Amino acid sequence: MSEVLTASRIPLENYAEVVGAGEIEELRALAKPLRGRSIEMINSTAVGGGVAEILNRLVPLAEELDLGIRWDVMKGAEEFFDVTKSFHNALHGEPYHAKPKDFEIFLSYNEQNRATLPLDAEFVVIHDPQPAALIDARKPSSNHWVWRCHIDLSHPNRAVWDFLEKFVTRYDGAMFSSPEFSRQLSIPQYLFYPAIDPLSEKNCPLDSEFIEQVLRRYQIDPQRPILTQISRFDRLKDPVGVIRAYRIVKRYFDCQLVLAGGSASDDPEGALVLKDALRAAEQDPDIKILELPAWAPLEVNALQRASTIVVQKSLREGFGLTVSEALWKKKPVVASAVGGIPSQIIHKHTGLLAHSVEGTAYQIRFLLSHPQIAAKLGENGHEHVKENFLITQKLKRYLALFLMLDRGL
Amino acid sequence: LNTAETPFDFVTASYLTRIGNQSAGTLAELLTGLEHCSDASIFHHTFQTLGTHHFLTEGFSNDFAQWVLASTNRNDLAEQLTALDIRDYMSIAALRSDLCRVVRDFCDAEPQFAAQSGLERFYFCESVEVTVPLGRSTRNLDEFREGLEHLSHASFYFHFISSRLRLQLQTNDFSLWLSGSLGLRTLADSVNQIDIYTNTLDSARTKMLRLIDRERRKA
Image 1 (cartoon, rainbow over the protein chains, first blue to last red):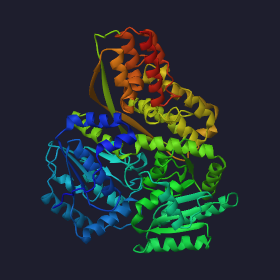
Image 2 (cartoon, rainbow over the protein chains, first blue to last red):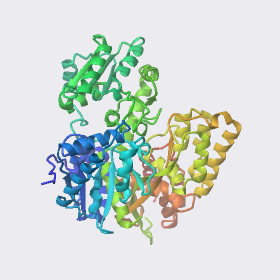
Image 3 (cartoon, rainbow over the protein chains, first blue to last red):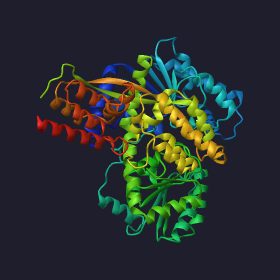
Image 4 (cartoon, chains in turn yellow, red):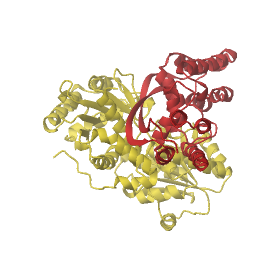
């Protein structure tokens, strides 16, 4: 079976407390003309990764609106996922010499999946490059196919993109997380922000007792300012740059730094980055470098809520949903102006953007000196997320897309 | 209370953002983009952005001004773009013309800044509006108030802000109906005077409800 049955369900009505009853009524109104219509979402994994996380939440909500939605995962062996992992990195701009065999493997698994997946829904949504060639199964003018690309295509490897583009341009439209990630295409392109779930463990409200308990566990002092960056140990997240910025701030403020991310034990590159960060920390007791087991959502939530300022000093970034997570918790955020971050941080309105270690340090110092401005940025940031980056907004965008396709707008 | 012959039908709207093929990295390129982008793009970056960023009530007016401020650090030009008020326009052509004039005048006066690269690029986008009736029809002020109180942001935005352009008038759906169908001209004018730049959608709605309550007390 390729169909994914989502386990956790949060009733749509529960979101009314967060977004307002009017928003839920609106979702129902938008879904009404689509009631019973068939939708098929297809990606390459049921667990792990942002896409699966979002579909796990989105599909049950769509079912509650009486949409005939199903979620299928394409099947592939190791050789297929090795190739698609290389394609993924190449599309992000990493050097890669694609061999003809790689393309053959890609096409062969897409063909196998075409034979087993239903692919007959009125609206077919293909996520990311792995299943992009399933478009070959489309019957002429029978249904609507759209491609949702979650990766940054601004500087792709030419050979891989040229190969993929032939499939992509046969869709009715493509959706990207940021205008910066899109390509010049002959089909319409739409902006589809990723989303956070305000009721998930990573974002739900927490008891102050639990937050204090987490701080005690990691020996973090709640009485002094806490700067936090939540991210995996990856060079592109620049943990050493964050430590350098912290050292500048430390000259003026008696603050602490928390760098928390998933375990680097099964990731050789991550282990090296972690080692570099530990070396840069020089056993400073006010720098806490935390390897959290499987991202421990409640602990991440607690650390974000306990923070004075949240930092996201990435050198490159996808969308950077950790920024939305922090903003949702009304935290002032200082972040690099890369990837999807400027969509979330409207400079001086919902947070502060920076372009260097020194700039990051300066913005942190500014916010520590002006707590009222920091609080205002946090309030605005919360509203920005509520308006644009919640799972309910994402559902609304999909409904609008299906209605638009249906009406031929 | 007056009963209207023509009911007010609440509608909700959802907006998709279509990414255009134009972008700008300098003020000169911004000017070129403003001259050539679609009307839907001008609408998106001026009218639509007020809906998606309604919670920003200080210093945020439109995407062009925000980009000039944050990416090129030209506060003087940003201020002039911020000052353009969509309520003064009855057509996108007129709004585009003023946007172009302001940027062109600046580039002519400060040519050294016109070609300077901004920190980030500006991407021209468009809004695609998808409307659906909410199935709620009102014929008098009490019913109208009830409907207004429970509207989503998108629906309120659709009737109060984006309608100005659709109607090609300096008014909005609410004021038009209050005046035309219920004969409440003063109330309609007061509603139309609510400042959409310094209010959030929620605070604009609260003000509107207060004005309606005052009218009901009079009746």
